[in-house]
Length: 286
Ligand code: SF4
Ligand code: SF4
Image (cartoon, rainbow, N blue to C red; front, side):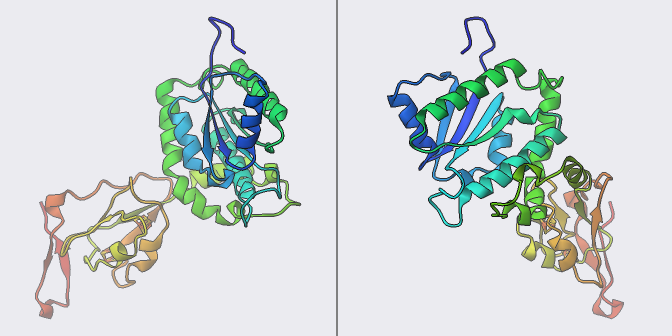
């Protein structure tokens, strides 16, 4: 435990109601000691913990993050949520590595309700590791602003990453080595090749098909107005690309290049020529 003047980490644990919380409770009533700076949040299942929860905790300055669930095949739910937690945490470790954060700052463990001493031992060991690493960013050589920018960037990709890795995230296989489920190269490529989608204002005919199909309500849609993708809301699912009628072909997939700025609102109105004009139209200029 930290003595006075020593670095006192901020640490957070998200633990399942049925096993790990029981272990933490038993640890308490048995008077086993662990650092008081570790704060715990109880959830019904470790499978409920999301990539976004972990990244949000780090974005809020947590130095170490713990996820605790029931031992494999002891989960109280069907299908077992602890497999989901195992895949998600290992994916998250690779994402942390990708943005330059030491993945040791995230730890997953199984603790049963009868393992109060195990809970205390894990907490003490993890706390020592985080104390040795120092504040988030220090061992990584990252200034706070750069650290936060990196976390924010990766957090925005979470829906896309979950879509791309849906099968692995749902894998329930006792014979699988989950620590090897994701490779650094795979995750680097996933992040590097994350696409953006953009609507070409010269081609959009305001047919609204994309806006109706978008699952994230990310397309700014109005009658007779060029449609625009809100890049902050877009989850990069690509639905608009396939939904836009072939004869318009207004949606473009962009990788590795900046997305053109959105057309200003006052320039989005589409002036349609008469029906006899073969339906051609264009946004109002300046
Ligand atoms: S890719 Fe297109 S459909 Fe998917 S969220 Fe983004 S704007 Fe919506
Ligand atoms: S589906 Fe294509 S043409 Fe229709 S509003 Fe969307 S981008 Fe424009």
